Length: 115
Image (cartoon, rainbow, N blue to C red; front, side, top):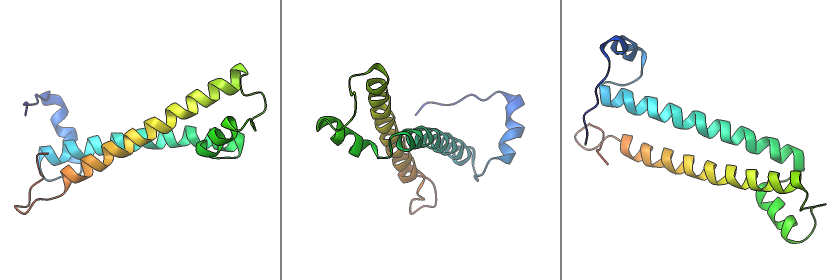
């Protein structure tokens, strides 16, 4: 594992971050970032769900069955691709959060595992 160099002027701010050690604090910050990214992604997904009244899975099924009006219009096709990308991004953030959660679980010695 690589060492991390932190600018001295930023160290006081770490007092406000949850965690007993610097590693715990860094993991908490990373987790917070992952959660923010997931929430932003889910907000964009909700906008598509409200616009079309269905989940992406249902939208994709309707697309395949020809039930989406004008599926090859620029706006509908763009929405499909962006929505599909957001679903993939959401899965990725969830995976990263699950992996981080596993790493943050205390080991039998009472410290975070190293991976």
